[in-house]
Amino acid sequence: MASTPAGPVITGLGITAPTGIGVEEHWAAVLAGKSGIGRISRFDPSGYPVRLAGEVPGFDSKERVPSRLVQQTDHWTHLALYAAEQALADAGVDPRELPEYDMAVVTSASSGGTEFGQHEMENLYSHDSTWVGAYQSIAWFYAATTGQVSIRHGMRGPCGVICCEQAGGLDAIGQARRLLRRGAALVVSGGTDASLCPYGLTAQLSNGKLSTVTDPERAYVPFDAEAAGHLPGEGGAILILENPQALAGRGRGPGYAQVLGYAAGFDPAPGTGREPALRRTVEHALADAGLAPSDVDVVFADASAVPGEDAAEAQALRAVFGPCGVPVTAPKTLTGRLYGGGAALDVATAALALHHQVVPHTAGTAAPVPSYELDLVLDAPRHIPVGTALVLARGHGGFTAALVLGSVRDAG
Image (cartoon, rainbow, N blue to C red; front, side, top):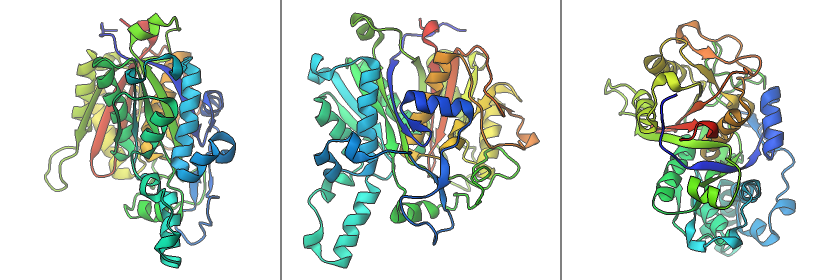
């Protein structure tokens, strides 16, 4: 492997996802190919063409989030608040013991507090403005999760939110890296999403990319001959990132993985004839990491399961790595696409793959399109040495991001 500069270390993971609550539940489900996809239960989906999604199982906000915050914030923020607590505990961090201005929070979001906003609009149109609560003004806001995590843990360093849909989780980590380089000791990053309500699903249906297949095992099958779009989901992951120097100073272990490289791009306007930004973005991320394509051991694909987008991603991967040049996986078939939380969960899964030295497989995909020429990891996890992982994400409208993670064993 090529020599790489020291980068931020992922020291803590908090997961609230359709595959489970907590690192152990999630990782066990991923390795077993245990899907969290099922019929939507948060509302009656009978009148909608999409009735399947990934829901976080057994998450009761009243049991996991302070009661006043349950009333003041959306389900999306509840999932993040609990994941942040998990991540801090996993990293062995007590925020009360660190300077408050040395801790920062940067999360991703796609649509903010959708369900909370829907309920308040129902109150407005069914009654009048006096039925709309004061917390509507903040609970729906994209930055609500960042703000609530910051307030709850006394983190007064630079805080922000990245709104790039599915790509936002990688962009938030890219921003976290910038803040650490500028002097922050610790950044809470990642993201969650929760748009499984009538208003949220209607908005998602508008792009025409959701799968209407009724078989939960075949509804979301990227790179497959029968790919027909993706499924929505809720949840995500919150990560703790620290400078290696700060980590060593508090006597902790090496962490899960190191952030080696990052890049972002934006697709050209349709009809221009210019190629999508993904290939260039991957190349820039590898250059940022000081790595060659041959140094990458696995790619966690964006895997939208929209045939045209799958073909474009496969083309970009062939251009960078050659035909079947690197193992490719997409564990997100177990959860659906989580938008603001999706890429963050992919990063958490990739970090676990590096930590445990195993590549999880892509459940569901059974008939890969031969012309894509991808080395898809199918049927079972692949036990191979994993030193470097590339995570890809594309958001609606053209957002594109790539993040390179390295094993902490190879940190230099």
